[in-house]
Length: 288
Image 1 (tube, rainbow, N blue to C red):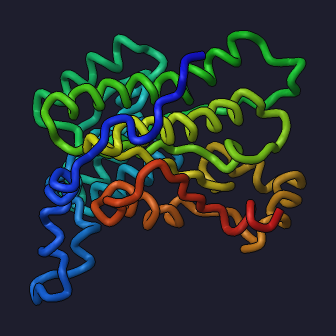
Image 2: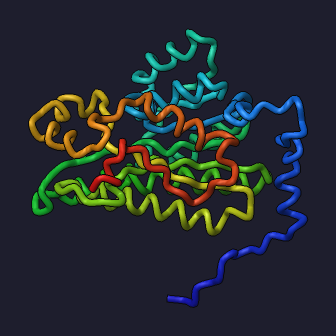
């Protein structure tokens, strides 16, 4: 292992740093026209959301579009995105649907290239993910590969494709990785998922160190237990009830409980936030 380089890898001069904050006066208290709520406005932003056909990704896509962004909705089946697309169109929002399997590296690079022909991707929300629940001795190689390729390699290939383009054109970039509290604490019978989410969190921190001085930020959102169509029945089971009792808030999260978090991370409201994990779990991890 080679000698580690001291951070920052590329020193940023005071002049460069001040240039990046050149709009600071616009946000000054001395500016009577400044509205602090404007930092959450996503009008003009193009945001790619993977895994947008169901669960939290579906809610993320709707929320970001409602806040003014042009959202590119990606999922393995484009047909499954139609309901969300229609919902966004109903309030006059902008969205594009694309079929994308994040396990396919070539498809990722081709999709990013096609999307960027209409304009740069300002924000990437790496949401696509799967979980396979088994005892450790029962996992097959295909199980591990499927989880790893979806939850970690896919987000990396997507992030790299967009990073390369933002460094080339000099535009700022923003990557939001959807992690999980299971990337920070064990549960049991979900080893590949927990390992991939832990790696995704650390990937974001590493990219922050490498890219913070070059106009790109990378953060993670780590939800706790949220009720979606994928896990609703299990959460209502006796095992789910025992889990609920361990959450200080006394309930599971609902997708809309993440509206504020995803708006914060995707918008200029979090412009000085980088390499951080935002945990939204009803106090679950704090109460352990």
